[in-house]
Every structure is written in structure tokens, then in C-alpha cells.
Amino acid sequence: MRPLNKSHIWKICYAVCTLVYMAWVVYLSLNNFGMVHRQYRLAGERLQPARIEEIALQELVDRCRRESKRIDRLRSAGEKNSAAAEDNCLSWTTTVLEERQKAVEERLVEEKSRVGRKLVLFYVSFGLVFLILPPAFLYLLLSFFIWIYRSIKFVK
Image 1 (spheres, rainbow, N blue to C red):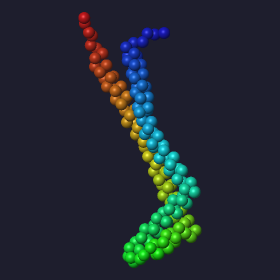
Image 2 (image 1 turned 120 degrees about the vertical axis):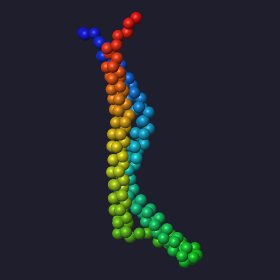
Image 3 (image 1 turned 90 degrees about the horizontal axis):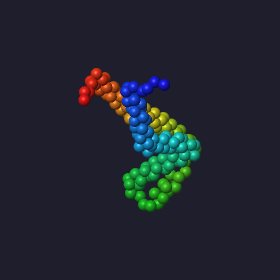
Image 4 (image 1 turned 60 degrees about the vertical axis):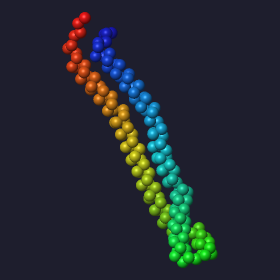
């Protein structure tokens, strides 16, 4: 087996330090990974049919209540009209509900694809900015200094 020369020793030390750096950066960013994955998981969970129906019904009720409050303010009517409007806001025909469900589903699918793009962009940018560029820049810098000072001999 050949003995290691100076260039191999510094490269091995650099590789070990780079691996320690990468492990440290990944460990520090685990919360960010969890946050991005949680958003993606929640976007997928919201696409379940029961959740879509619940969201669509809630949007219809909210819109109806806003409109009834606006009408009540215009009419300056008493409590009887608002109580009747509240009852009307809770019941919807199936066609109206299905239309709203389609709109909600389209919006949620777009949201999930947006979160998926965000997930990919996060990993690509994280890998490039924190894992690849710093060690590569440091390697080039060390190689440059070693190349400059390789012909210098220290005399005692």
C-alpha cells in the first residue's frame, strides 16, 4: 500500500469536514423540512370528498350570511328576518352544492400543485445553496491556496 501524500491528506480531511457540515446543516433544517412536508400533507388531506363538501357548504353558508347581513342593514329589519335568513343559509340544493364542490376541488388541486412546486423548489434551493455551493467554493479556495503555496519551501 502506498503512503498518502500531502494532497491526499488534505482532501480526506476536507471530505470528512464536508460530511460533518452537511449532516449539521440537515439536522438544523429538519424543522423546515417538516413544515414543508406538513403543508403538502395537509393539502392532500383537504382533497378528500368529505372535506371538499364541508368546505363548499361552509363557503355557501358564509356567503349567504354576508349577503343577509348586508340586506338586513339596507332594510333595517328586526330579528325575525335575520333568523329566517339563518335558516335559509343552512339548506342548499344539490346542484348549487355540487357546483361549489367542483369550484372548491379545482382550487384545492391547484393549491396542492402549488405546494408540490414549493416542495421541489425548497429542496433544490436548499441543496444548492446550503449543501453544494459552500463546500464547492471552499474546495476551490483551498485548492487555489495550495496551488499558490506549493512551491514555497520553509527553511529552518
